[in-house]
Amino acid sequence: MRVLITGASGFIGRHVLRELQHRGIDTIVVGRTCPDGADCFHHVDLLAENDWKKIFSENEITHFIHLAWYVEHSKFWTSPENWRWVDATTKMVEAFCVSGGKKIIFSGTCAEYDWSSGYCREAATPLEPSTTYGVAKDVTRRIAEKICFEYGVSCVWGRIFYPFGIGERPERLIPSLIDVFQGRREAFEIKAKAYRDLLHVSDVASAMVTLLGQDFSGAYNICSGSPVALEDVVVELAKILNANPDCMLDLQEKDLPTVDLLIGCNRRLLATGWHPAVDLQQGLRDICKERQGENE
Image (tube, rainbow, N blue to C red; front, side, top):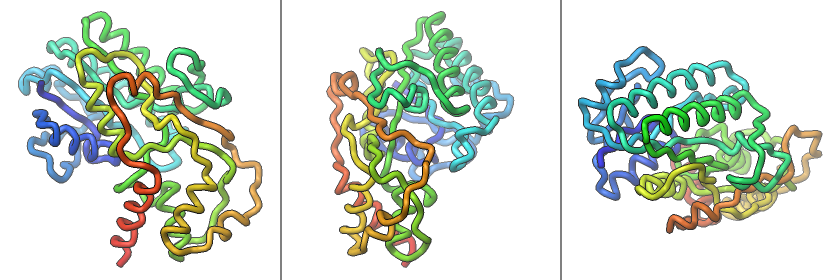
């Protein structure tokens, strides 16, 4: 097995690369930024015109993990940049299949689902995305599955829910809460009674690498399967940091545009033999240590 991975310098990608290396899997990284620890890196602008068939063939790539996408905080939900990534991904997929590749792992998103369902199952929950990002990912899946089917290439689509852990962007929820409790930013409104499906990023990575196995194909929810109230996240972080959670919890909630419940069913993923290894409390403690170290 020889894997080519995109997006390895991103939040999830760095952990996937580390997991691949931990398992001794020969890996080539392509992209504009070389991540720490990459043994073999090729500088490639993924949105430019590239000879992908040559890249896959000359490097004798058998498996492809495609994580790269437009991820600028908040803007990615509605940005037309999403469509550029649909086009770029389609070209990569076709070239990989033509060059004799065996399997592709994609990073999809829970935003492909109809969120009004609350509890999302791969085979039962409608795919009715309400954002440009979700629509673009779903369109990409449909195109990729069709191309892979035509060439007899195995295709796995991992719908990732709410990853958290070391290396998150400071604008994301948990780092932002830590900054509030440590006096680096003002408190902000959240829907404290909303439930989300949080999964540590190292467990996301181990799931994606597990899915490289030859027997796995189709869509998988990459999630914990366990609902966590955002209020509980606030309280746990405050406890770790010896802070008072009331500065967050006492804010009057307005009509925040978010659903009350968004959880994934992970039974199909568990059937692969994968199991999460990092619980919420340990993951939050690790992020707190990281954020404290960055600001000392």
